[in-house]
Image 1 (cartoon, rainbow, N blue to C red):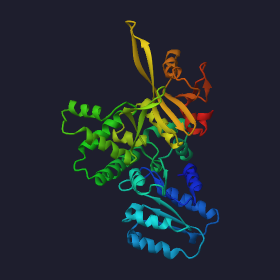
Image 2: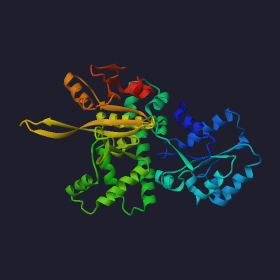
Image 3: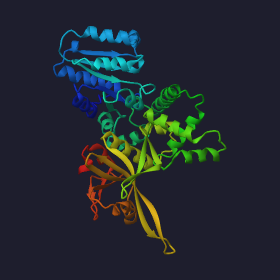
Image 4: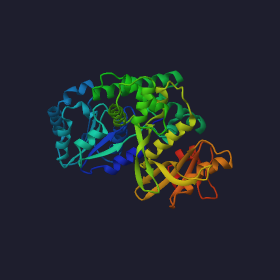
Length: 418
């Protein structure tokens, strides 16, 4: 298998080098956080003049390093390695194995010639923990499963075959080393059950995981659909399951988000410039995991493509919301009614904004009118884009909307600015 360079994340580490903060590499388990530290970042350091003696690397989940899970032992080990005033780079993999790791890392931070990088497992080292424990002292680098461009870089085949493989089995790095469909599906199923579910149950002290599993199945079956805890509760009740409360459902959804398994896209009123608290949409961090969860039964390419586009926008560093445009129109009786129409994604990054629609196909003018319609009510000049499954480069319609194929959108890192 070809090496996947992960240049996007390497650049983020380089940009944060020696910034007097703890670099905290987060993301769903098995997405490549450890590999990013070593060999990718470690090799960058050595190639740019850092001697091996100034790189202190520990894999804290290895049995040979078990003694360093004691915070005092870890601190002593690192301090013994510091023999001069030049910069030392501390690379600690699976830091959550260390008891009271926050104190150890904060102690390192007080040393002017230590530059600290850590990864952590989702079961005990989540985004919510980082906010609590390292406020103002930590710099988070979120790592995602392979984007399609990273996947294609290592894939042996053409773009169309690669995309079909990607929306079926996703971008967990080890998928590329599995040669058969059975091996891929078995890997994803085992990863879901034996890693993610176990982590969530252990961390949150869940006594019975049957309801957690039911909620996961509901979310997996309805990616791209609006939902909320009330709607999920009603679904439970319609199936004669009445002993789960809305607060519990809300907690379980937050557990899944904290474990980086799903992401929540909130609704944003574009014309009113305000958020709409409920309902929201949920997307899986990896579509292969979502498909495995449903035993590859619900393979609706329209929804999977929407999920892939959403993930790509997150990888590129955008804040992504579901857009809502409120309009007034006449019904069949001639009465004015208020109606909400939707833009799939509103993407913001600093002063930049894009509106993106996911449309599997636009076979005729009527379909184009439907996809274009929300854009017609947006009273600003930010770029409006429709992404389709057809393998086309790019064209603009009479209204100035950009239409491009999914492969062009995913493989060209500047596609939003074309």
